[in-house]
Length: 365
Image 1 (cartoon, rainbow, N blue to C red):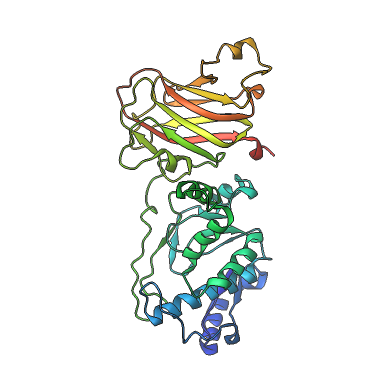
Image 2: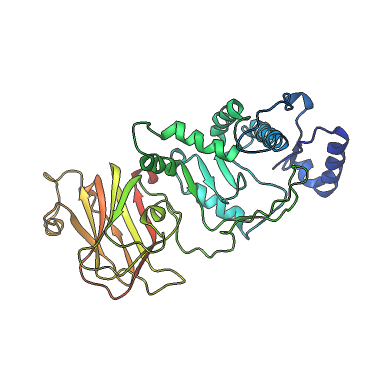
């Protein structure tokens, strides 16, 4: 654990260090806690910065120095561990937050993400893999005068994965593969006084106290679509990205939910869970699970599997029972181009989809 004291007043820093040594003497002695502080020479001249985005000269100076503070901390931390998570001294945390973060990170393949977000506020609760810190620091050093760090993070993702010849929707999909949001938030900001002199900031994370109404998994990159009428912005895209549950008005026969993979993948198993704690009756009824193999001909499959083939090339491999559909995918159908949920009979209730889990090849290593 690293404590950064970013004040250049030596007397102030020494006073804080003395207090921390009293409070955490064992942790400091064991090396669990380290206290660092940048020398005054680390900071460039911050007196003649260009005012941008309507911010005052003092605020521009404050946010610019803050960017440099974060860089100093990340540079020191990059050889200290496997992951790096940014916290502040004026937050509270949810019970068992550490194990929650650890388990969530370990279920993800290291190649699939760059940022895990455990709070929606600014830079609080943002977690990175240690090898990525070098790139992040280099990028921030180039633009530290221009924007706050949370804005710059989005630009890093754009540079890494967005194709200028593609539309904004495609870009957002690509960035979402690298930036994964965990809900509900694990950290809540409680401080009122900012390090910017005279600034009172009543920042709170609205997701902190919310119950978990969806279960989050990392699925293959895909384009999603549906014929169902979405209710109040609870879109299928948000569900697949792990941001929200999908909520639709009464399904009718012929409606569908489609997950079309960006690249065909080998899928071992699937789980779709409908309904949630607040609306347990809003489940998918009379709905089947279908897959579209990459190859339409020459499949070495059993007669039983052949009989499940539909006219459009999809194979019906399962159905919802009591709001849940789960099962294994015949390996001979792989690689899979798409999953489809098809409504085969009119429903009397609305439908919520709160969990989509597709266990695929890169997660099986």
